[in-house]
Amino acid sequence: MKKLRLICLIFITVFAFLYGNGSAQTKDDCLDCHDDPEFTTEIDGKEISLNVSGEKFNYSAHKKLNCVACHKGYDPEEIPHYENAAEVNCLSCHQKSKQKHLFHPQILNANGTESTPGVSCINCHGNHYVQSPKKDG
Image (cartoon, rainbow, N blue to C red):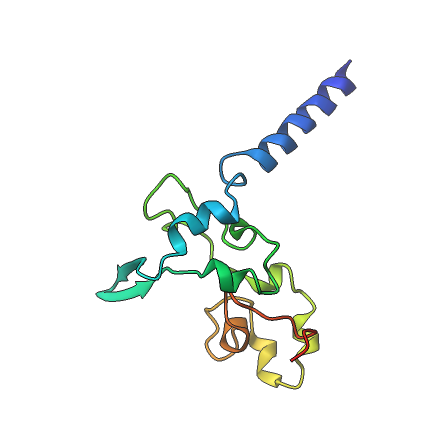
């Protein structure tokens, strides 16, 4: 009986994690607001675009991912909902990338986030419209 309770508890926990409020956020939910060229915010007196083109994103290497796969730790009910979010870290999925980029010795200093100037992944690959290196053309 204890084993059955444990299995049920694990199932409920996994279900809540997968289908809870933050994980239920789909790419289309995010693009409802962010696929607007005029969508901006002001940070330290500077206007920053929050636009992500759904059309361009759908041609990227990450097109099958929901935004919350990379953008973690925010509350979609709060505005701004990115206030307490964790910094996007490309190495959380692309651990072997450092070894593939040894032709750039400075890449050994990269930590997968934008916080390492000159060696962040987005410096070369961009952020939302990343193209696969295997893609022709």
